[in-house]
Length: 202
Image 1 (tube, rainbow, N blue to C red):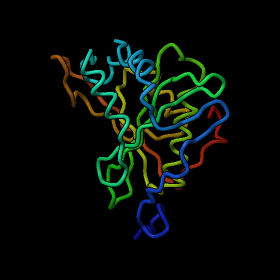
Image 2: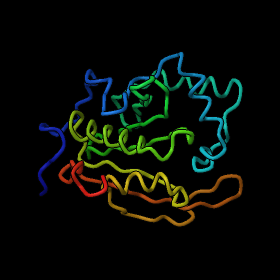
Image 3: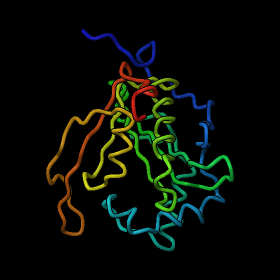
């Protein structure tokens, strides 16, 4: 039988007193009410929602969606920690990262991320996802963390590949939105395979 490689007692540690997180250029923190304008700026972009299989929120729907980001419990299966990613130099809100509890018994987590396209090409997403993986494998104690991506979203696929996640599955036409079928890639990494911060291209 495999030895547990998550938290030492086989349970997730859900103490998030370590927040906010800081990297060389970024701060990952809880969302605040005054983040709404910057949040709406990228959540209203068609090129962002193209890969989310959701309608772009408008008006009250945008405010309702944002309200869900202000209260994010992290205790039970399905709970999702959502963090705003800001630039330390000027506090600009660049996007968001999330970490979900997919299975308490199996210590499985799911990582997600959305960034404003205006800040693309500077490595911010890779830096932020690396930080949330550090949190997930280190402080929280997940055994495995996975990501689900649209194969057409080359930018997001590049992030997980740069961080060393392994492609485990390509699901063909497993979802449909507005009459259009889409595929899904699953990437994952075990705690024993992390950290990969010194890997080439990371």
